[in-house]
Amino acid sequence: MAPANITANVNTIPMLNGSNFKSWKENLEIVLGVMDLDLALGKDSPPALTDKSTSKEKREKERWEKSNRMCVMIMKKSIAEPFRCTMSETLANAKD
Image: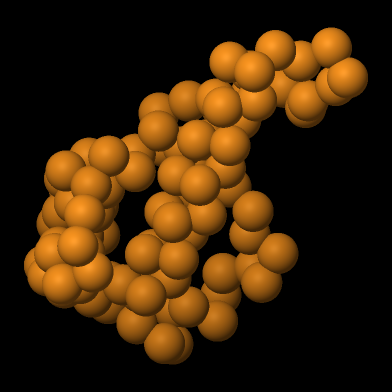
């Protein structure tokens, strides 16, 4: 997806301001789904990789981690500053 399309999609998410959670969540889910980044919202993190992990397991873990990282960044961007400070800086899982 081109950077301009990513920006356009992300900018359609209303800023979470404390009174619009339902609308914010619905728009966030739609945008993340369209961008194919919603994997981390629907599935738990795959198990930790080991020496015996297959290449398929490694790809799935990488795909989930990218989805999670992007979801967290997009969520933080779409939350008004006064509410953003209530989010833990150590937030590591978009599903949380």
